[in-house]
Image (cartoon, rainbow, N blue to C red):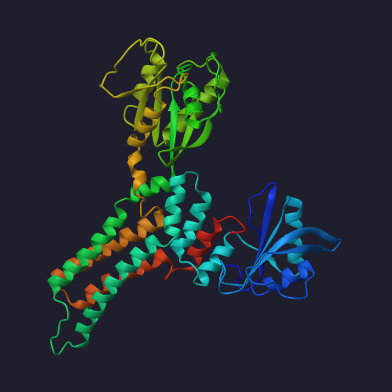
Length: 451
């Protein structure tokens, strides 16, 4: 783990050119470095935007708006200085280089947020929510992340832990008076209380699958023989002409991907080469092989058929290959006369016209249903979206199940307490009240530099 006593600096805005870019400093020397960087003798007024010139080895190189946030009332809990400069990468790098010359160290990924966690400004759930909020690609993802950043999940976990703490206090009080035979909580009653707390964890986990789906997204592969309109459907879902569409068979040779918002879920849609039993050349054969590989790892396959033409051997082979995996079957070209209306097995068909755009909303709905989500899910945000949280809460629930069984069996209090304390330790790992340096390093290494 890197040092947390240095003053650190990094660019806090995305790479590239823009109207403004922000360079952030945090640490005990942040104020003095900002003063020296701007040639000021007096300190900056806290939380007051001040226009100042930035000076380097060759003289002034830009004007910046400097804002200083003294500890502990800052994002990191330390002295923080933010320089809003013109958004040229050259100027931003110059400001960072000059700050480093004056004593700052280049920040590691996530180091600003790590310091906020270590200084008690946020807990680990909120720190992870910062990353999720930055990386969100759909409005619903952003809402779920912001909900956790606001402390909703943390509050519910603390309520659960408070109930367990109260029960532990009574069980330990019983242990303190063994000769007198005092029991501040009877076994069956303790079992019922533990069951009630475990039920709260179960409710948190009730939306965990949907939460993971919302946070991590899902991969959906478009598959079909040549000229069924896969690329046109891909463009309709993407909302732009990402894929080249022509009347020539085999136009798509390689995989093309786009992340699209379907009912709030980030869906990575993959357009693949058309399936043919006998490829026209070695390039098409490679494209077909890559399409098969994409289908093998997809969470859902959208099989695209030409509804205006009779089914071919290529269609039947693909239908047979995907019969045992999650799939949605699409009959494209509904703007033309249908050559068939049903398939063997009476599977529901989604009829669309990629040319006209008809039925695309029905396809989006069918995809949501197939992956276990619905549009109505957007009304209630899932409480748990992070796999780490799901694992820890699941294990905490299992520990409480053991404790409840032991309590009802009139097992001595110390054994019941051991399981309850195991559950409490797991809850503390969720919020970061109990954690390891390796875990922190793993979590914060996935952050962008400057956050």
